[in-house]
Length: 333
Image (cartoon, rainbow, N blue to C red; front, side):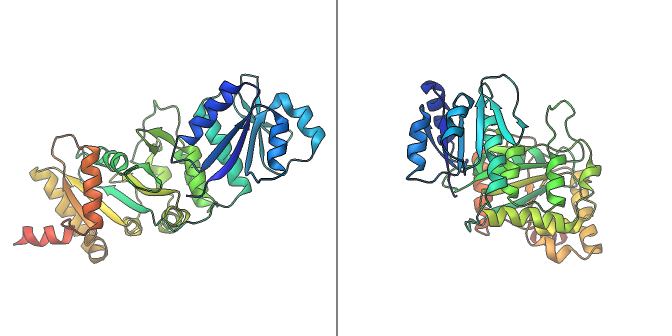
């Protein structure tokens, strides 16, 4: 993953160093931060070295403007206690913002100034989908993300909520904004995803929209654009889409994913729904396309640990899992 060099400047050394450590300690952020407590030291550094972004105290604004024109995008740290905003083409953030808010503002500025280069990481894009309700689908999705984050992976994991209905009690519903970026085929989509996501147990998390009707606006080409951005930009090594049974207006959208996990439970009615799903795929002419890389996973009523998620994904990549077409043929005989 490419690292963008960020220069942090504030007269309070403890604050500047703490922010630097917060940024540099996260392997999932594309930043390398350096802290300064004197604006003259930043000027001296820039005379001999390059930087991609400056995040410095607004107390130094008069000095900074009197010296030279700033070529790098600049985020001013203000002493006022308000959320990040824009005023007269300047980018401002309150000094008392959380580390996450700093990262969001920095990513937004970078996405406007820099293209995110592809690094050939070949991130995997997985769908977790089932015609069976209450089968552990979300539990499996989250275990995959948590288990596959880190452990030698170059990028991080991303959970994408695509269930029929989201949680109205959540303070953020950023899927709507993501859908807009997808429809517009916005550049630097991975960085925009990072600005929209919340961190959950080491991976990025974007919850489901309030209503499936927004997801119904997605066409196959839209999903292809999203997944290809994940694969080519190299920021995330794994995307897991937690998809509700009625969330996709066209089932062929599933063919864009690298693999599909189909969780189920050992119940006569549940298994009947799985076989009905198989028949639908046959009727739509999608059986041959999907059944070879759709993997039924029996969840039962149990916890599914992150270690199991990591092992499951490794087995999929190694070709050790039983696919839906194999299971279907076994049950017929």
